[in-house]
Length: 551
Image (cartoon, rainbow, N blue to C red; front, side):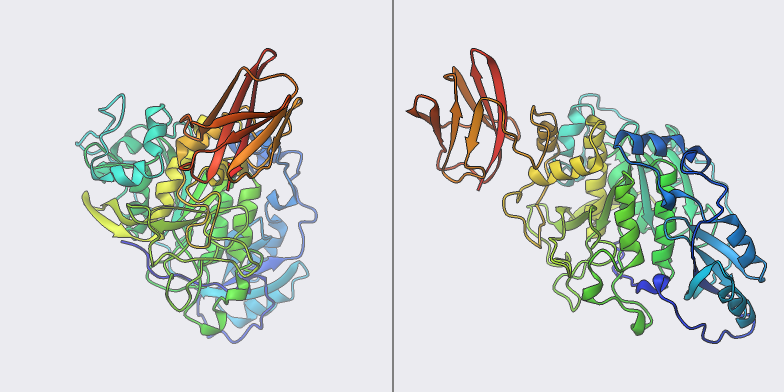
C-alpha cells in the first residue's frame, strides 16, 4: 500500500515559539535547540569517537571533511535539560538540538532559562515506548537464494527492473554487493519472517533496525509500508519478485507514525538520517513526504519549497554533502490542490523521484516541480504505477505511488555505484541525469527522465569522465556543442577512423566530409535522437575520445 498522506512540518524546529500552557502531567515532546558546541569533549580530528570507520572512509573517498556539524550535542547541555525533570528523547547533532519529553510548564520554563538553550518549539505528544521484541532474524523454510547464476528470473517484476536497466547491471555481476542502503519509513511489518527476505536475513545483510518514534529497535510489528518498499530493493523470490538491489545490505529505520499527522516526524527523519550517516550508509531512500499537517497554522506553503526552510530538507541536503546518495519520493499530490513535490523532496543535491507507468508515461498522481526557487523537480522518474510488490504474509500485488518508484531506483543506484566505487555521489547522480530519457530537455514532470543504469555505467567508464564537462583535448576542437544537425571538429593530423556511438555503445552511421585540410563535418542521420553521444577518432598518434550533446 502506498502511504498516501503527505505530512507537514513547518520550520518550527527553527523558530522561537511561546511556551503555551501545558496541562499538568501531560507528556509532550519539544524540539530544543542549543546555542553552540562549546567545550565539547569531541574533536574534529578524532572522528572515530562518533562516526564509524565506514562513514569516515566514505567521506575520505569523496574528499569530504569532518566539520562541527558532525560533533555530537554537548553532553553537559543534555545533563542540564535532564536536571529540570524533563527527559531528552533523541538528539540531533546536525541541527544541534534535542527532542525532549516535558511534563509540565515548570520544566519548560526552566529549559528556556538555560543559557545553553537557543529556543524551544512543541513538536508532538509522547507515545509510551513498548519493549523491544526479539531482534534475531527468523529464517523461513522457503529458500529463495539465487538459482539463476547468469541472470535472475524476475517474473512479474521484470518491467520495473528492466525499465531503468537494473537487469543490465545484474547481468554484469553488479547486484549491490557491499553497498549499504538505509531505508527510512513508517515500519517494516513482518520483514523479519517474510520469505521474500530470506536471503537478506540468512546472508547477514539485514544490518539492524531503529525506531525513532518509540525510541527502541522494534520495527517489525509496525506499519507495512516500509516492508513493501524494501521488497522492491531486497526482495528475492525467483519467478515472482527480484528487487533492484538484491545483494545490498540494509538498515531499517522508522521515523514515521503512520496513524497520525505529528509535527515531530520531520525531526525524527533528521535523527534517522544522521544515524544512517554515522553507520556508513552509502544510500538513504525515503518514501515519505510532508506538505500539510493536523494543525493548519503549521502547514508548509509553496514558498517553503526552496530546500532551505524545512528542517528535513536542510538535513537532506546536508546528508548529501556528507557523501550519501539521498533519494526521496516526489509525492502523490500531482493534479491535486497541492500539486507540487513535498518536503524533503525540494532539497538541493538529492535525487527526487517521480513516477511513470510501465510504458514510461508520467503518472498523473506524481507530484511535480518546480521548487519555489525555480529548480526542476523531480530529478528522475521510475516505475511507480502498477509496481509489483510483496506484502506481509508473502502475498504479491501491484500498487501505485512515488513511494514505490523511489526504492525501485534506489536499489539500482546501489548497483551502479558498486560498479563505479571511485565516483562521488554527485558524479553518480549527474551520470544518471546525463543518460536519462529526457536529458536533453528535462521538465517538471519527468525531471531528466527515466534513467538507464548501463548507459550511466558506460558514461562513467568513458575516457572523458566529467559528466557535465566537455573537454577540449589537445589537437582536437569540437563545435558546436550542443549540436543540432551536424558537428564539426578540427584535427591537425588526418583521422584514419571516426566512430560515433550512443550511451549504450550502439554505433551510429553518419556522413563525414572534409571542408578544409584540418576541418571535418559529421552530418547526423535524420533518425538520430536527442541525447549524449561519444566520438572516437583514431589517427597515427593514437585514439582520441570525446563526447557531445545533440539537441
